[in-house]
Image (cartoon, rainbow, N blue to C red; front, top):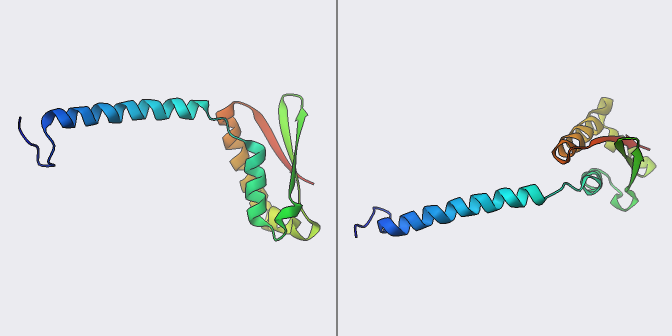
Length: 112
């Protein structure tokens, strides 16, 4: 057997490549099984933004074929969630909608 520059024989290298291909296929199957937890995503990001993370509450409401996530925060933190000219909430909505397209559903986010 010939030894390659990396210290492996040719048969060991082939076995290593086969294992890598198997791992890639396995990873793709795992990704298909994952469904995004949109409510948890909204809650996680909102808690990171506010000063009182214990006051964050997310309710999931079905409105026809759309799921509406109602985000409730402390009165003092509402400005942090909305941001200047609504930039933060717009970004949060974009994030949730992007995750929802993977799931194949329609979502909306309301700050109440």
